[in-house]
Amino acid sequence: MTLKQLVYFLAVADSGRFVQAAGEVRIAQPTLSRQIQALEDDLGETLFTRGRDHVTLTAAGETLLPLARRIVADVETARLEIAELAGLRRGRLRVGATPSLCVGVVADVLAVFHASYPGISLQISEGGSQDLVADLEDGQLDLALVIHQQNRGVAAAAGAGPTRGATSGSGDSTLRLTPVLREELVAVSATGGQVGLDEALGDHAGIVELARHPLVVNRPGYELREVVLSACAAAGVTPRIAVEGGEMDAVLRMVERGLGVAIVPSLVLAGRPGLRTTRLDGSGWTHRTIALAHRTDVAPTRAAEAFRETLLAVLARTSRTGALPPGVRFIHSSSTG
Image (cartoon, rainbow, N blue to C red):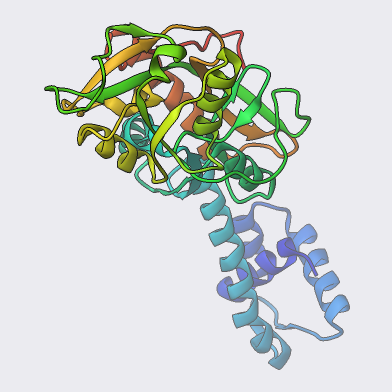
């Protein structure tokens, strides 16, 4: 039994004539008759009582009729639904990102994407970069915006949570990283003389100077904490940790209340007038790359491809208009990723 034979069967059943049915399905009448005969042979039952100029359904034909209608209708529904997915009129997109990216970059891109493709259901996951990479590899995400630092592979997001799984770098055979943004790490302190520092931080400061002040850091297991402590160790200084623990918003709030200084990604400073920014002197550890990650062993969905194009277009436009936050620059080019 084939779908084509069921379509021919319905045409004959509806018209009551082989000649008329052949015209409706646009095949020669002898061909249609042979297909109906093949269907009857396959089922082992006669489907039509053939008269001189009209045919009627037998009991077997009456039994097959509603089943054939449902099968053909289901196939047509499947075709329409697949066409809607291909045309991005419906579907699902699962995107992962670090918390610092979700409050700014991702929200802006999703607003544009949703306006263009309102039928696509959006699912957003926040987490550390290594967690997001693990979710990508497990097939739980379609795309993820992650932190990629030179010689450190895919790093956990600052303030995003403890990491798990092995570090994956740009050489990972199952993941491809498309660098999109270069972000600066900065030191922040409270404005208005609220912080009890021995001396105010200037426009620039090195890690040795920062280590003389009380620091607010995330709890152990957060990549940014490890970056700061590694920089202190490399400079031969021991930091004074005033407060440790909490998510990024909590760290920023503690700094605003004068509990100490913190090193944070520049993306999180939008809308924080209570913080004074100090640029960091140093190389390597003071900057990091934000990359769009996806698997290479499965084909991306149409929705994922559309999100990638939207992300790059929004970031490029934001960069051209000078609207990116201070310390953040767009680094994608047509030859990248």
